[in-house]
Image (cartoon, rainbow, N blue to C red; front, side, top):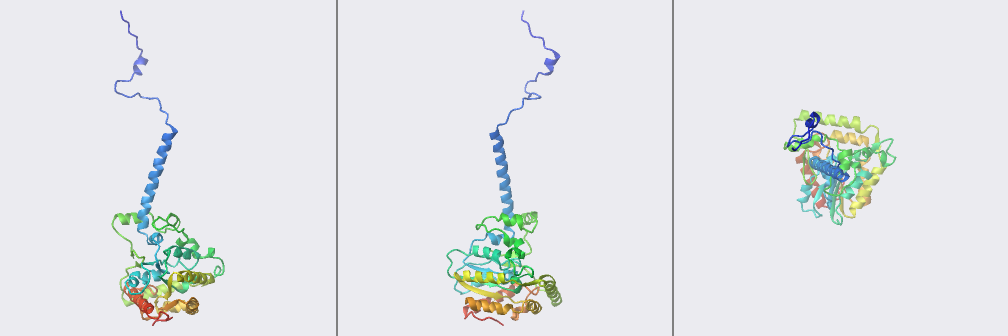
Length: 345
């Protein structure tokens, strides 16, 4: 007779029903190579996501767009006055002889003349340029520094903590140094703005020109806006500031280097009479300094600060778009002539 083994209750309880995995399977050891591969895949996915995201962020940021733009044989250089008041298309469509394209590489007031802005400007000039056009917008505040720092080295200047301090990157590359250290917007806002098909309050052209798209206002509103702007300058910009010789030296260095590659023009844009009066009180010798530098370097200085467009600013400092076009045509006419006038009425 065949005998079968007798199973205890313990044996029966541990028996696994057909088709069902054991309740407590034996742990399988994972090889270090597998863990490393998964870690690498995760890191690569994370990096790709960050890169994709910042591609979206930088696409809507006009400062980064200028940093990543390709070098150009001709440039417009300066502050927000030049950024909004000097339109490359007007010059490019003219009969002036210079190497095109012309790119507007102006920023806001943080891009004062000094080693940081100089470094970025020179990186944007296309190698081999010989007949470029370099329009440099100038104004007293671009040469100012805190009185305690005006005669010190450039590390004490205000821009040493601003976006112009960021590293120069190859054209088309994302400037992570700028985005991580100096990007002053929220990281999520550009993403949602682009996803919703919206854009910011300003219009940025491919040639670097920025249009604030300010609509004409009534005389009372305009007068108040100008008065507030002048008051802001007098209270927050001029006190405790003075001419920094090093800034003048860097303008001279920039103009000298650019002069080897083409024509250099200094331009002072139209500003409201009250703003001009405030700037003259702050630095009365400014115009004569520009005239002297232009004579020394054999370059052009065009002074439109007190021209008939002085009443065509929307805040005392920046021109309306249409007035900016008029100014650019005036500059074209001046350069097409003798181009040596130090003042244009």
